[in-house]
Structures are given as structure tokens and as C-alpha cells.
Image (cartoon, rainbow, N blue to C red; front, side):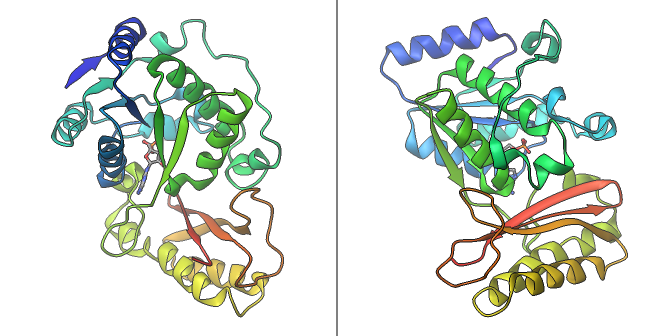
Length: 282
Ligand code: AMP
């Protein structure tokens, strides 16, 4: 596995491989890798000749300075995990390399996709995601790029970005990988205290219950259940629970077993913000 810190060197490597006719699968990450990330690498491995992974804690997508400062950084063990998973190349730049002129001023319009849920509670977040994804796609020039459904709204924003930019990168959504007790794997889980970690699976339990309720009960009742299940723990506080159409992210107002819907949740465990989601009619 080769590791690059500079745009010019990874660009040259990729260009050569593409000239040889090899397909490239790309997995963008912010590091602190866990089995959820590795599942993306493994899927990319199966579907492409070569896999490139990026590790970059993108400062411009953090709306909260403390979250950026406390974001776990574990580069050495990340590289070991990627090597074991059969990744071919890693691109791990610093912020100066990615943004030599400082914060880019490009503003994207994602319509409704950016106005609700994460877009509403994390102002500027998806614009920062879009800027970095566009830049990484330009550098790595992948055939396919792999994103987790764990960040469901991000996946839809990236799909919209690719459409807007008329990019020919194929965006592939991959299922959420969970701990044995249902908690969605996340780099932020390492920051949970023992008590918070014990209670955090309530988020998953609330979503499973929501899926059971969906065909029969009104949306408002399902949202109340999610709130009550999570807030019943003194360790957790719900920020939002929404039930939306998976493509438009517009609220689903009437539950029906034939109406596609996904329940999306954000909750705080102390200062750690956790998100999760679940399709309700699959
Ligand atoms: P991050 O490093 O958090 O930016 O995540 C990098 C990629 O891994 C994103 O596409 C995430 O959606 C995906 N990802 C993170 N956690 C999981 C998980 N538990 N299951 C599947 N994909 C995940």
C-alpha cells in the first residue's frame, strides 16, 4: 500500500493506473477507522481493480470548533487497518495542502436536502462536505465512490453534487455497520463515557420500534416514541427525530406501508453528537 500526502503525487499515481485501464474505487474518510469504514473498503475492493482511501479531517465541515479539536486522530493504526483490508493507496493530506488559499468561498445549493436535519442543525456542514468531496473526486478521479448510509443525508447530498457537477463518478451507498448491541459504529463512539456507551443503543432501539410502528401508526406518534425512548435515559438528549422520504428528505406526513420512508435521528450523549437512521418499510 502506498501513502501520499501531496495532491500531485496521488494524482500522478492514479493517472498512471487509469492509463493501464484499471478501475478505481474510492473511499473518503476522516480517519479513526472502524469496521464501518473497512466494510466500504472491502466493497470497493470487490467491485474495482484498485482501492484508494483518503484520510482527511476536513476543517470546513465542522460547525463546532470543539468537535474538530476533539475529533480522534489515529493515523498509524488506520494505515495498518487499510493495509490489512487490501487498500492500494491512501491519500492523507493536511489542511494547507487541500486549502492553500484558506476557506474556499464556493456556495452550493442543495435545496431541501440541505435545509432539514443535519443541514438545519449544522449550518455550513454540507457545503464543507461538498467542497471537499468535489476536490477529492477531482484528485482521485475514481470510477466509483463509496459512502455509508450511516450518514444518509450526506449520501443524498453527494448524489446531488455529482448530478450538479455532471460528474461521471458512480456514488454507491453501503449499509450501516453496527456494534453487537445495535449502536451504529462511529469514530465519535470512542469519546463516550462508560455510562453513555451503555445507554447509546437506545437510539437503535427507538429506530427498530419506529420500523415496527410505521405500517400501522401515525407519524407523529412514531416520532414521539423515538423522543421518549431516547430521552428516558439521563445520558441522552434527542436533538431531532424526522421521518422523511429517502430521495427528497421531505417529511412523510402519513405513514403507509407502500410509502418509502426513513427515520433520521440526532442525539447528544454529553457533548458527543450521535446520528443514526433506518429505512421504515424495508
Ligand atoms: P467519516 O470518517 O465519519 O467521515 O466516514 C467516512 C465514510 O464512512 C462515510 O461515507 C460514512 O458514512 C461511512 N461510515 C461511517 N460509519 C459507518 C458505519 N457504521 N457503517 C457504514 N458506513 C459508515
